[in-house]
Image 1 (cartoon, one colour):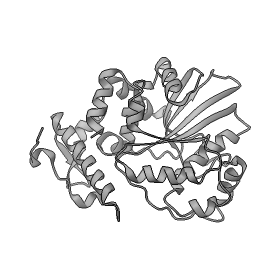
Image 2 (tube, rainbow, N blue to C red; image 1 turned 180 degrees about the vertical axis):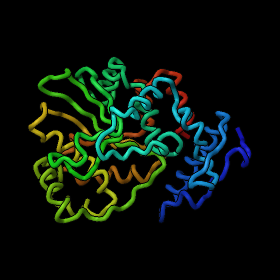
Image 3 (cartoon, one colour; image 1 turned 30 degrees about the vertical axis):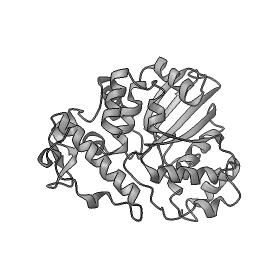
Image 4 (spheres, one colour; image 1 turned 135 degrees about the vertical axis):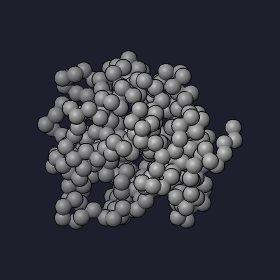
Length: 309
């Protein structure tokens, strides 16, 4: 279905450059256009970002506030639950306007991918078994969650999972957690090396204790595109090492669409830096959807129609 430029709104090519990577640049531009097309097909007008700048991949504020960015009533329930004041975490980085209004953001996509698991232990249990071979009962789904953003028992740097899935008996002696990072339109970027005084010593302690990394992990990871994924993985590893909570088993999972070649390459490089790969997995959106366990059937189709191409 061809839509006019007037309906699609402003989609500037320069917004989506992945330097030195024409294949990823093409994917980013196509993903932005896909979101503008989806918005227009829903009969929704485009919004502004930044203010007073029309942007085809942003909703009008009134549509965002009506939860038009989300694909089913069950998902809207999950969003409202997370935004409720009693779910707020100290120093959380969840940006409500971005969640509600930005079509390209991976955070609303994360809710659209996992939101129907919220308050549905049976579906969560089925997803755990089908996708991660977790045999325990589904317990909880927590979006934009950390066990303690500035808690010295963990990484202490504000890092959080986009979503964490919990399995096991409430109050039991052990539990399993799947900590997940979702990517859609974004490409991998280099981070500055961690502060050698305030950050690196704790990171090193977690990494070495885990025995998950090859001896030359510092050279492979620090100050590279791998570092953000590494910090997320360290958060999961720190949870596994925490002796003050019930014994925790788990995996950190990086999710991205097949067309996101930037994160596909990064994931392979990260795997190559690991001595023990048992706590890290990377999977595509397509492979998750093909298991048919995350959504009701009509919601799954709406997700495919919106995000995949």
